[in-house]
Image (cartoon, rainbow, N blue to C red; front, side, top):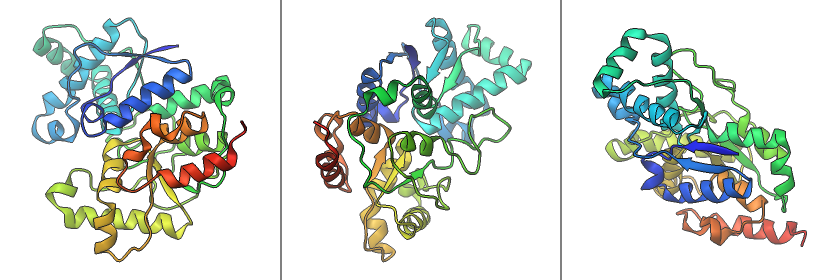
Length: 295
């Protein structure tokens, strides 16, 4: 199976680890990722706050590149990029005037018939096909994960046909359950981590992260699992500071979904670079890997 692939800026810089994991995991699952040629930033939240036209035109241009690549489906692992691209797709389909303005501004005809997929949708499809089950080597039953979606993956300013519940999404839980894990129910799965305010207003952001960590710990979680590079970076890189400031003694490794899937497929901690986390995530997985090894 081939998919057009838009990594976005985060996966080429601060979360390049996620990009490498994405490619390794998808290759093992028989998915060939075709990175878009000459793609540009989606605009993220910055464009939306400063220029309405650019906030639509920037991801629209990427949709045009995807359509021109000959692929019918585009996978976007970053939650912000996924959100902005679906918003642009909505405007291209619902507002003819905006579409014509974008076509004129970009000096090319942009079509929006490419299906936009999150990494969860791709993995769920691989569960349905049976491919994920065929690749599983380990069953890390000792993990007690809290699935953290963040605030952008399922919530939009208007109805967008995303394949999950807006307030209580279950896609990530279904993936982990297919690996014989038992994700915990908790209150903060779609709460905001503060995003870039961790830099501009840490007082607010640290409070938001403390609430997330406290709730996960109260439910018995020993790790967080996410798909969002901003959420992962905040909850990993700032967790020591957040916990020290808010009197939280325990720490929670914050994994990308690719790391849990990769370990379950026997890909190993080193190749997946899980040892690069700020909050150590290797010990938990090393113990589980040795215990669950079927070799």
